[in-house]
Length: 146
Ligand code: SF4
Ligand code: SF4
Figure 1 (cartoon, rainbow, N blue to C red):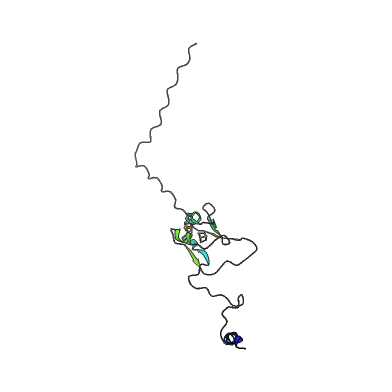
Figure 2: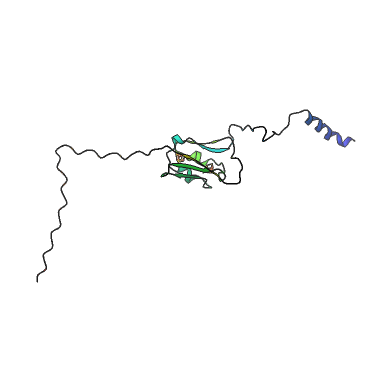
């Protein structure tokens, strides 16, 4: 009988204390502030430089400069944080909350509003300046003798 006492004590303790687990998914999980959940982007500050794409070990990020999109495959991301470190505009962050499980690897993509700076216009020529001289025509070759 004595051997059951420690077990009985634990059962009684558990009966009158709060559960150690949460009733997921009925109770929403509260993530600690510094949880490495998923990568987020502040698209208004992104300059489409591609540093995040080049620094991502599993190749989870794609930056399309021509199409002006930033895309991440969250199923490939390992939350290492390199992209956040490398971004020169500090527009990436790792925020709490994980990618929900699913049968397909769905990409998350955002349209980036960045407009690249236009090349500076050439300064206008001063009034009265001579037009650039035309390239001299090469001398015509003499006609062959008959
Ligand atoms: S956290 Fe790491 S794995 Fe995830 S996108 Fe950034 S660099 Fe890639
Ligand atoms: S998120 Fe940052 S590193 Fe990635 S393309 Fe935009 S500015 Fe560059």
